Image (cartoon, rainbow, N blue to C red; front, side):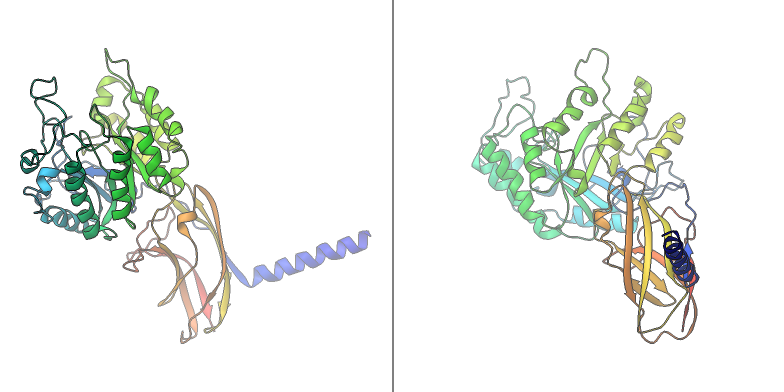
Length: 458
């Protein structure tokens, strides 16, 4: 028995030794940099990369209608792949049926030229920006009166069929024109109330609220949708239909004289009540600061708690209103940026020492997603042998936080001349075929590919 067991172990050892002699094993060195990658990170707000940030603790809710110049001096704000902009109804439809799409066309072009994608929201109105004048004079019903406490702003009766007709016409046309645009990252589901967030004293019947959400779900089949948080039934409904979610008061730790605190009284419990805990596995989560990092610092907010909650929610994008990060907190924000979204590390790559063109070759890769969320678009994991790009079948959208293994046989294209070639790896944009994702490993070259080894073609 002992002799048989010894021979068996010896055989395994010889097989392992022979296999290792015929393959190359690479273990790339991990890097600790903050990485700017598609669909994740701190966003600009009503701004793009290289444009001046807001100079104090305030910001504008009114989206820009024309291109702004870049700042002539360096801007002290994180580089980012996402710009978040939002516009009011009156800006996009100043006259009934006449849409000012130049605003959004220009913003998409600005995003492209600044190395970003666009997150957007269209909003009915707020306390300072009224509904379009043509709508208010159309005979549509009003929900409040001039003499009411909130009478300074004309609030629509959103049960009125005219509200549904005209607002959904804008949303439907928005989807028809922009759904699937390569530089459109996501769209907020905006329905009724201030900023379209779906809450307030003048909510419509649930059947109407649900129908308003359905319009977005029908209009945007390819671009991700994000549900606003405030009304739990609406949030739950949108998530059940496949949307991600966002909230607008991340970081609210209370103020003097204020008993209600979003981060303690509303958001953590609301996520559970809406059954939203696992939505991040298929759809993005986006957070927006209540106030600004500067106001948090001034009020002495618990930054560690705020960051930990964002990571528990598996956030991918963070809007800090294009305002300055307090210098005392800069290092903490840098570390936070390394954790949100996805972060791909190639731990191990094994491939044959030599291959023949026109034949198959086995490869094995071990990856780690060290972030808190997956990537939400169909990017392509590829290898390059000399001039030949070989796409793998890896499904990157399924790479949740943790380990992933890619084991497959790849076809070595015919016509590769004998010789030694560099082995390179990259995650490619499906639209351009070019490297699009920075990896947390050493070896990145000027074209975005990562050199990880060498192989001989016979």
